Image 1 (cartoon, one colour):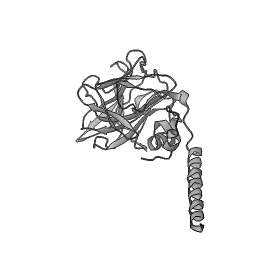
Image 2 (cartoon, rainbow, N blue to C red):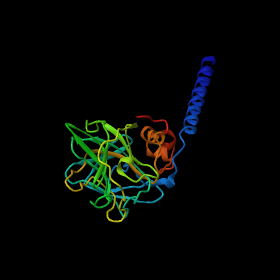
Image 3 (spheres, rainbow, N blue to C red):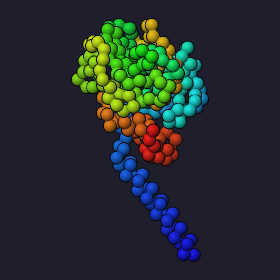
Image 4 (tube, rainbow, N blue to C red):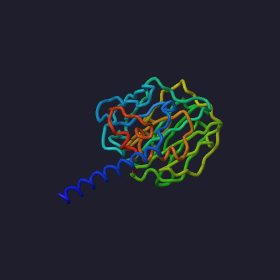
Length: 266
């Protein structure tokens, strides 16, 4: 009986300790403001041709060709590099020089000028294009507008998962004002500067299809979102480590998945 009592006490203590860690972790992982999210896709549907938007805006995406497979968090989209695409139906991005942040996970299938996230026409200053920058036998994260570009130095085409974030801070007006992050690390800035006036009417946000002479995305793509604010480094790392669902405090299924997701690290 004494042994049983001790075992019961140990179990109760373990549960209380775990719950305490959970509460402490939640208190240090405040959800981001949902009103700052333009759209966010988890790609956890696992089937079908619709990417469900977990933001308050209901901007579901139209998937063309890409298949589902295991991702960083749940499932993700697998692009074949030939003709797969994703279009945010009826949404043409953030315009002018308004602040913005684009985040996503990617695992390259090869080294190429992967087309990740883009909108706007191919006109000076109006295009907004997040893609891969080729350098020797590898590639880097790059943001460009027609006439200018800004790219970092860390390798992202090594067939490993990488979290990427492109931040355009409030009050900025040119492409080299962007801050680029790879796996939570701030990148150096290279390229040619160009004033920006992003067109948010001409083209819906597209993920996968190439623009001009570049190439289709080839690889695995997960947890993509666009925010209408310039996220901080800590916020970007929270998204990277905990996933969009936990960082946004969203629980589409009405379960404890979001709360427990805050404990997950990559």
